[in-house]
Image (cartoon, rainbow, N blue to C red; front, side):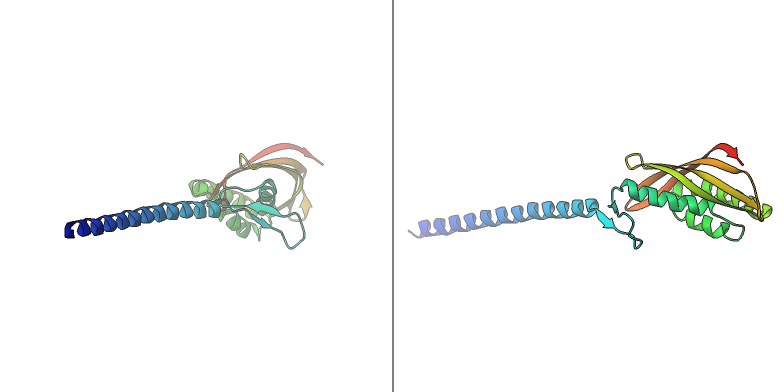
Length: 189
C-alpha cells in the first residue's frame, strides 16, 4: 500500500514537472516570436512626415523611403552643391559631405575641394533653376535637370542645361550619397 502511494506521488510529481517543462518551453517560443515581431515592426514601421510649409508629406522607415522623400533630399543636395558663392561654398560642401557614404567620402572630398578651389579663385557664383526631377525609390536614384546660371562677380556667363544623377544607399534609416554625377548638356544665352 505504501508502495502504491509512493508511486502515485511520483507520478503526480512527474506529471507536474512535465507540465512545467511544457509551459516553460511554450513561454520561450512565445518570447522569441514576440521579440521577432517587435523587431520586424520597428524596422518596417513607416513614419509620415509633413513639412511645416504644408507641402506634401513623405514616408520613410528603417528599411525604405518613398519617391517624394528622394526628390526632397535630392533637391537639397543639388542646391547645396550648386547654389554657391565664394563665401558659402565651403559650408555648403561640408553639409553635403555629411550625407556621403563612407566608402565614397575620400573621392567626394577631393572632387568638392577642387570645385571649391575653382569657385574661390575665380570668384564664381552659381545657382540652379530645377526644371525636372525623376526619382526611383526601388533603385534609390534621382535625375535632376535644370538651368545652371553662373557669374564671375556680377557678370553673367552663358546659362547651361545640366543634368545630375544622384545614386543613394539607404541604411538604418539614413540616406547616403554614393554617386553624384553631372552630365553637361548645351549652353544657351
